[in-house]
Image 1 (spheres, helix red, strand yellow):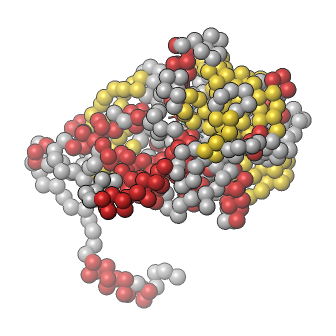
Image 2: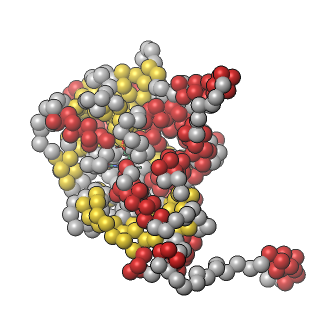
Length: 492
Ligand SMILES: Cc1cc2nc3c(=O)[nH]c(=O)nc-3n(C[C@H](O)[C@H](O)[C@H](O)COP(=O)(O)O)c2cc1C
């Protein structure tokens, strides 16, 4: 059974012994961060936390608990998506991608159940009052100050909503997008929306601004864990995240009509902020914000969202995450994406065996790729291919190794790569779009990239020396030492 909402997810985490309830009063100003940071830095990502008595400096405490680090381990990420191992999702996708329409009627009929599985996934509208609208607050009654929105780091520009699903629609195609973008609370009924220029929400906003139309926006907090994850996944703009979440859950996501716009919102959300962006209005300063690079991202201009209504459950929970020096909770969300998207990557680059973005590389700074090299120059083909795909285009350093290297072990990948390169020969520089958060590029979001061909070099690639083998002990010796190991008295 798929988990339908945040409280079910928290319940399942609790049942697995992986939740710590913090009943002592803790300030939303910095204290939640410091506690969560220590937890997230522990081996394996630490437990999930539920702060039951968040307080703020302005004396107004909140009776809304704050949940942190729900997705912050391999096992909780798997729990969120209803699998034992994240690779299972990738395997399901591979199976769907491998569908070849067979010859013969009987074989075709045998395929139907698999196709029917797809048809079950579209989001479904609920009838009656949805859970996310048990309480409805409209217009001037809205006061975001009553919610426990944390101030994460000392240099932050204000309180931040950090784990939302931001729902927008393409004005031309009508396709929905759900994106996870941090949101700064700037007033009782205003927020600043940090959708970066390469993201789909920003593209919708540019399209609306071009048409001079007011843009409806809904900000969902909570909902089923697969939908929360899907908001962070780099899906192509044509794919609705709620459809993808339905595929992950093997059950449709349930949606309800918003109260003040015609957007659909997750019926099972804890809280929904409804509002709009007026493209005629000047942008507002957003930031600084202690970011997942481990550095502050500087203040910059972003659109302001006016909140027209807040709808919520009678006793909502506030989902939150912190970002900062890695590793943090977002590593595990990104790690799920890495595993789930491997088969999709192989569709266009079939020689890719595996890839990995280690935590220190904060996703876009470092990508290790192993390939089944079959012809000279293939490492360059792969790095160029990666730089041509979606958010992979932002990758700053791509290191390509042979298929026998375990790229999920960065120590092994660096060890082999650094042995294998002649830097001048094997490094290639190119230019392209750079992540908004990169503080070092020559210009904002534009700069250079480096590819390292760390594969074994071939004669056809101009290498005419002998290439040595890795050192590996022979199995017979290993067997003899295994047999004598305990007698040696080395291990106590
Ligand atoms: C915790 C967290 C915070 C994020 N914050 C932002 C953000 O502030 N702005 C942004 O553009 N992307 C942010 N991202 C990355 C996007 O969620 C991610 O690129 C996603 O694919 C965007 O969806 P889209 O492709 O539908 O635009 C964040 C991701 C996570 C996990």
